[in-house]
Image (cartoon, rainbow, N blue to C red):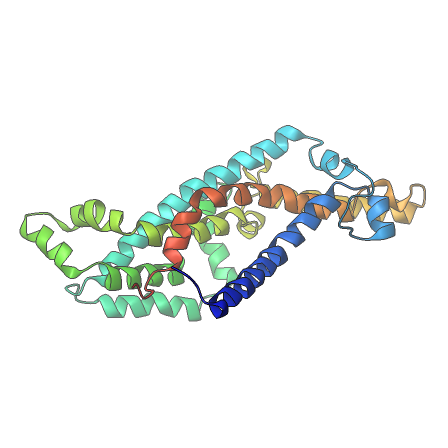
Length: 295
């Protein structure tokens, strides 16, 4: 099919616009990687540069001074992210399915109760006392799994997807054939929710992967520290050591990396998620088009 000149011109501008948006997203990460591979002196003297002026791995050497510690933190974060995302999606989708069923008597009050918790909370002190004094799950991986398990906004999105994309006749026909509610959810509804679960699962995995706050509150054992909290500790130790060296006056301020270590820490923390995204991109795009008009 031949396109008119107006359509060709529109396509050119559309591709240019999308290309500029892609460049705006890629260039900052490119600068992040390039400048993390430079020396501290170069960054302090010339600032962030597009082309590397001096190749240097001092920031990464500082981070991986104890590689077994970093690798162990990686394993903790990977375990918490994978297991936590699976558990969160399972219980969130099951709750969303119950709230979407029109034959559930109190589904609207239950939905309001869940939504109410997004507006008001008891605060940090009761939450801390509940975890440490009553549940006694501090210094365990369980608190890292439970702290991000329920996101009410994600739950309501999944409920909307079920209500708008999966006909009630599917559940009714299965019930007529003798299937119970859990079998209907597990064998029929759950497979039909793959696009929604892929989109929500990515956001849920990001929440688990980037969570350092729960570890700072409830984890004191070093062998249970996730990657994000361990990297934060490295940055704090570097900043503290830099202040001591500057006050003593015996060592130059650039003896320890400061700016480059921040860039290197970001690369180490975001690298796995960036590498994971291409494998789930098609599911993520399908999930974003939930509810769109199809023609």
